[in-house]
Image (tube, rainbow, N blue to C red; front, side, top):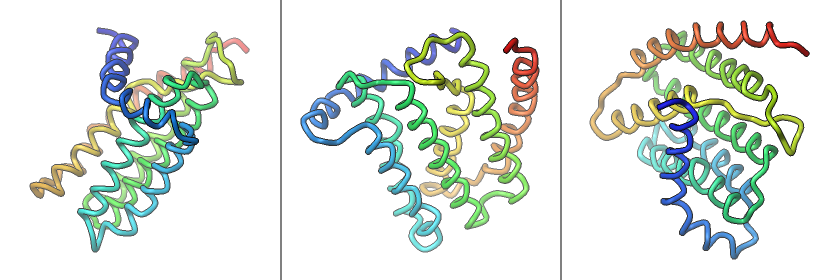
Length: 201
């Protein structure tokens, strides 16, 4: 199964879960971008509360996953307002939310600071490079067609699951996950960089 098939299958599963709620939200003035922004606002409190109220931070993460990971895209598709501009806003919101998650994990020293900084930097670089590479020769209703690929999305989900394992059972595998992720990101970034530098403008 290639990346396109995995993405389509993932969207189909998420659509089945989120569409019934999207139908209800479509009757309100709420827009997909409002949902994306709400997810970011919730995650701002994640690193603030994690030290004293880790379970509240966990709840904020789950709420953000539901709002920003499921509902904004489902609402956009149901209302027929899906656009590349909206996708860019969604990707940006996802990235900011994930950075706030990493800040919170670092604040309570669940991860080596060097690993956290290196991984987060590579994560952002990879997302930017992936959008550039995947935007080539794509039709768009905006000035770019943002598609960050599934790799960074998989890393986001992995760290979110790791936080859930820590909050519920006390397992701490953040350093190991960060090191493996770094090892995967570096060659992938180099490949994207090579593709970008060989593009014909």
